[in-house]
Structure formats: structure tokens, C-alpha cells
Length: 121
Image 1 (cartoon, rainbow, N blue to C red):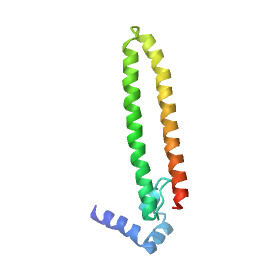
Image 2 (image 1 turned 90 degrees about the vertical axis):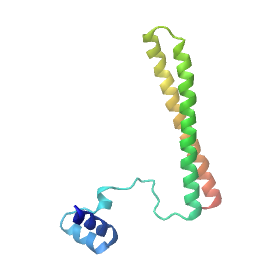
Image 3 (image 1 turned 120 degrees about the vertical axis):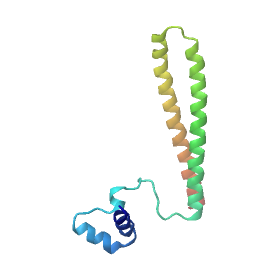
Image 4 (image 1 turned 135 degrees about the vertical axis):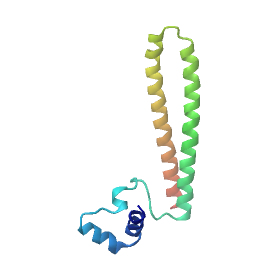
């Protein structure tokens, strides 16, 4: 087990080893576990701060939206006596929540994209 870990860490650090591994058909750990397409490997300090703020604001705003929509849906569904009508009413409420969440995330992205282009990060 330890030798596997050592080989994996070496394949990350030594480009010669990873090229030799490719020749024998062995993929490096980077290729087996690709990073998301939005990952930027060389960020400046300002860009990293903007990305961090965007992530934190997205998490906080999404959680707040989920709490408000959840409480509103609970109060609305509580007033409907028939279980079938509750289910029918739940479908547009879920669709409205997903649409609001998509708009919120797109708006936060747009704001931070214009902010970072304004700062030229």
C-alpha cells in the first residue's frame, strides 16, 4: 500500500515518471482524477480572493433562498388539506425554487465576472 502511495506522489511531482508511465499505459493520478473545468491553476492573489468571495456568497445566498422557499412552501402546503393537491402544488413550487436558484447563481456569476474584468484580474 505504501509503495502505491509513493508511486502516486512521485507521478504528481516528476514529469519523467509520468511520461514513462504513459508509455506502459498507466495513467497518472492527475489523469484519473481530472479537475473541474472551472479550476484555474495559476491565480493571482486578487483573483483568488474574488473567487473565494464568489463561492462564499453563492453558498450563503443559496442557503438563504432554500430556507425562505422551504418555509414558504411549508406554510402554503400546511393549508392544503388534500394530499393529492399538496403533491400537485409541490411541483410548481419546486420548479419556481429551481428557477430562482438558477437566476441567483447566474446573477452572482455575472456580477463577479464584471467585477473581475473591471479590476482586470
